[in-house]
Each structure stands twice: as structure tokens, then as C-alpha cells.
Length: 216
Image (cartoon, rainbow, N blue to C red; front, side):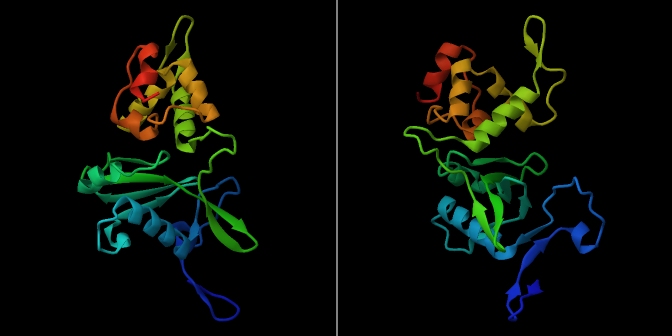
């Protein structure tokens, strides 16, 4: 925590390297400190929506939080996966954590923005054009999928199997029909085409059947 000029107390979550005073490479953009009230408010908002029937403090359910540049990963007890999945927004994802199957990993979009000394949360915002709803998590996953694919003389290929289950499932995006991939980038993808859907079920191999499988 820190004290303001008028005695206010400001709480933060601080990384171990920052607490230990380690030197930081100027090229290192790792998040070292986040305001506690901002993170806690975001957690309470998200978990209150995903677990509305719970009378317990939403923050008491959290096992671990990981803060990334544009996402917040929340680790919770694995049995909560079923009720949470039913209420996920289009840009949210919940899967069993690979490192610890007793927990689930919930990822939600979140970017901290500093303006005039105040920190606010910037989430995904819909495009102003009618019918356009860009999904940042889906676009990011599509780009990650293509980064794993190499162009051969005849057909695209991958040099090695992706190391994680998550990466292997995300790879499916690179082999969607070209019109679906273009729709993702434009924000006109079918309503059912989300990161959660790609992780849960493999889309049909035939391009002609894929749109229908996502509710188009």
C-alpha cells in the first residue's frame, strides 16, 4: 500500500521482482503492479454475473489471479465450470486448467488504462457499425492459430504438434472456411463462433457445413 498526500491509503498487488527491487529491462512490458480496488471490483462484477445464485463473497472463491496485458485469468474450483460456461460472454473463456485439473481457468478481457493519474478498466467495445461485434479474444486466437501454421509448396502444415491442449484446439481456427475467418476479423462472425465454442467442439471439416454448426 501507499499513502497519498492527504493520508489516503492506496492498495496494490505487486510482483515479487518489483518488491525485491530487481532491475527492469526497458523492453520488458510485464505488468508489475495493479491497483487492488480496480482488480477486486472487476472480479466481483464478473463472478457476480457468472455465479449469481451464490451468497458467498465472490472473491472468496478465487484460488489465483494472473494479470496479462489484455486479459485477466481467474482460477477457481473445477466443479464451477458447468454453471459458469452457461453464462459466459462472447469474449470470455472457461476451461479446465492443464497444470491443475482440480481448477478451472476463466479468462476475461481486461486492459488497464492510466489517465490523469487514474486507473480504469478498458474492456472490449462493440464496433459502432450496425451488425458488427468484433471479438478481441477470437481475433487474437485466430492470429495465434495462423502463427503455428507454415505454408508448404502444396498444402499448409505445422512443424510439430502444439505443446498444450489449448493450443491444439485453437489451431482449428486456422482451418476454418476463408469466409468465416474474414468474418471474424470484420466482427461479423456467427453468434455461436466463440473461443469457448472452438475449445469445446471441433468444427466440421467441410467448409460448407461450418457456418451452420455455429448457428449461422
